[in-house]
Image (cartoon, rainbow, N blue to C red; front, side):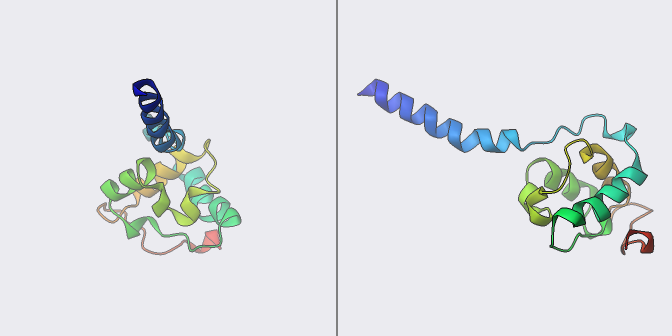
Length: 114
C-alpha cells in the first residue's frame, strides 16, 4: 500500500511540474540576440499565429517581462503560442530594451509592423 501511495505521489508531482518545465524558455545569452529580428517576430510573426492583441513593450517593466517569459507565459498573447523557440531570445531582448522602465520605452506599435 505504501508503495502504491508513493508511486501515486511521484506520478502526481511529475504531471504537475513537467508541463511547466517543458514550456520554460532558456533566456541565457539574450543580450547577444538581434532586437530588429525580435521586433519583427513579436509584432508580425506572433500576430500571424495569434488573434489576441500583441502588447507593446512599454506595457510592462523589465522585471514583468522577465517573469512573463520565464514563469508566467500564460500572460503572453495566446499563451505564447506562435512564438518560435528560435526567436525567443530575440523577442525578449526587444521587449526588454523597450520596456516601460527604460529610456527607450515603446508605447505604440511601429507603423512598419502593420
